[in-house]
Each structure stands twice: as structure tokens, then as C-alpha cells.
Image (cartoon, rainbow, N blue to C red):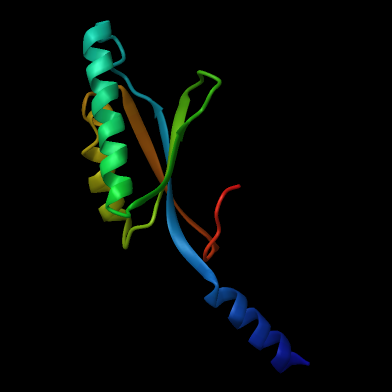
Length: 114
């Protein structure tokens, strides 16, 4: 009985895959004029598309409640350092409109949102 349980547990662990969840938060510099803010947002969206096309960003989206948390990214990267470099290259983070937190996260391989 113990062996079968151990094999089941090992199989379940092999089906898990690490990802990186990034929480995007309001940054300290959100006082840009509307044209500048619009340009930053345009760059932010272009960067999201670029990271997704590169296969690094699996999920991205804003929160709808206009709170401190502004959105999420879920990355499929080899390290937290790689995620940090990608996020810090985002125009909204560079400008200070957004800050972020990185959280290593694990879920079953092949999981998708429906």
C-alpha cells in the first residue's frame, strides 16, 4: 500500500510545473498628464504582447476594482531573475506608474483557464 501511494504522489509531483505570479500594484508616480499616461499604457500593452509572443508570459490582465492591485502576470520562465528583468523592462514599471511583487507558484502542467 505504501509503495502505490508513493508512486501516485511522485506522479502527481511530476505533473506540477513552476510558474511566477506577478502582482502589479499602483506605483508612486501616477501623476503624468493624460497624453503621457496614454503613451505609457500603449508601451505597457506592446510589452505584454512581446512577452506573450516570446512564450514567456502566459496570462496577463487588469483587476477591475480600481484598487491598489492593478493586474497580474503569470510567467513561464526559468528563474525569478529572468522574470524580474522582463517586468522591469515594462514602460509602466519604468515610469513608476506600477510596482510589482513576484511570487513563485506551482500548478499542474497543461492547466488553462476556461
